[in-house]
Image (tube, rainbow, N blue to C red; front, side, top):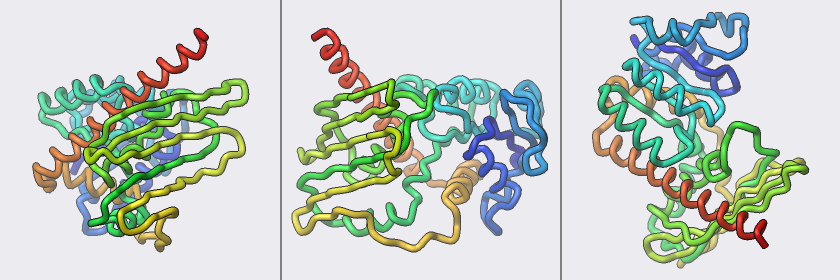
Length: 297
């Protein structure tokens, strides 16, 4: 059994505790056992699980795993602390706010001989799985992905990082990408922002990624992918799968702990995660250059 601690009790932390208390039957997730949770606040028991200190979690031999479910800005410090102590880590995306930091953390995990897993439940949704099947064999000519949602929360970083789930979709669908241009519009007083990124596939086909957040905006993903044979303008209608997204991710992480995931799959996943973070770095750099130029003008 892998004794586990959950760091951060927001939505993700609550779900992690719930899923470990009632894991998918006959799955690798049954090998996880929640021993406590960590929070900056003093809280009562959560789902029958007691609060413990980070010092206790690091010291205890029966705790082998940490689930990092804090705001993005606190991911790096928590991951590094638990890796240094020789604990396995599962973290909600993105694991870090720069590509270089993520490389350092992954190197540290390898040095310590432990698993570092970045959650990407967006790749486990039924509509994404169906979309990936539907576009198989088709040649992209051009496309766009436009995400809208409510105001961005503090502590979650630049939109290229807080919205990296959408970038991961594009990389998983169309392969490694390059950034050709990026810009950022922001009205802090009205809690509105819009980031527009121009991307290019290895086949030199253009993709546009837009993150737009502000009061009253519905949470939605709008696609427009033009292929050689057809155009897709909406996600495929699918039924909800019986196993929840976080539970699917929990099973995958548990399989890694048990050494059940093929090495080539682990390598491909690391390459994809680091590639997306490298793209996010470049997008932030270009966007901020553009903002600086506009302010100078």
